[in-house]
Image (tube, rainbow, N blue to C red; front, side):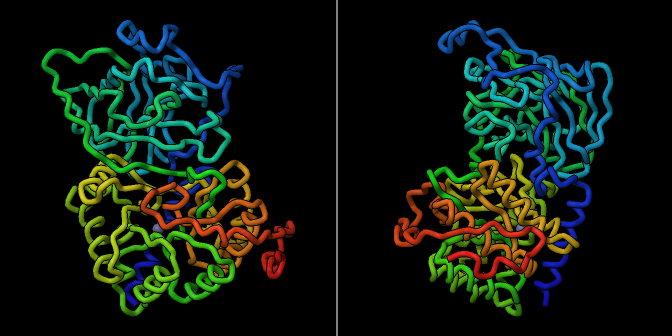
Length: 462
Ligand SMILES: [Zn+2]
């Protein structure tokens, strides 16, 4: 029963976290928080602060992004601020952050929730003037393909570096090309992934063409690539995390009936627990063609762990357990709670060649609603995010209500003639198994159900 205990601990942590986040923040991936409403009348798709052509990079003038003189806006005139749970003290010319969680973050935007073209600056440096903690990540965030902050995912991806590696005295210089994102679609610089609770004070964020003489800039460390959505046209993937042993048969039955393949993100500790029997369950899932991917060893916010040794243990023990119990290796990893920063990404890349880190663009919000008086709000969340263009799901099988809605979700996606597949397939991974077209031949009708009648979806589709 060890796993039952650890599962409920996971749920407690999860709900505890959820209690401090408001629902629109979409799980614990706080970086998905949409920026506040735009106060300026702005209609362009892409912001160009630079007026030359892209080839004239040598003459690009530095860009002061933020000197923290205004509470709500940075020097570009765009929003800056902390996530709701991050206490911050603002003064004239600085902001002081008091983190207590790896998910908390502070963003300073490069455009009014639209794409900012960073390419003219790509050979330059992001410069921070700061004091205090260096135990955090710095990220350059990339907006979605449509440069539309109302779409899901809002942030298509981001790349992160460890502040500590780049800090000397009160300065940090990061070459912009250390951020492997589409630089034509950047939207903000953010600070997050805190792993001590010492305060951090920021005085200046800017882009400069040179570092001071003698200032050491480290090489870029390899890290994992972060995905929040499927790239294959017309594809959709269910990424299913932790579950309860007594619900797994129901999930399997649905997968069989619906003839779909999914990806399970599986925790090492659960697999080792003989009582939970997950090992034989997931062996069966593998045989049926589902993807089994890493989800840490004990389901903690890995980025928040203080030592690299602790980060490594979460990765390595998960990998070893996969090898021992299932005889497999996986390049796919979903961080518990979606919490991801530079260190976790780098350590994954230290153990796995080209790791793919999988978050989501459809959050069923089962963690929020499954035990509430309104479990049907899981449906609302699903349809809301799919409506915004999301195509990669996070869900768990921790409640019969979620499992019941799962069938309806599948029918809905099928009725749109969208192909449901494993995460590696939806990311067009050349190592993934070929797509079986037979799975997608039968059209499915979907009848809109009453939201207040969770049992009604039985038999609703052909
Ligand atoms: Zn999980």
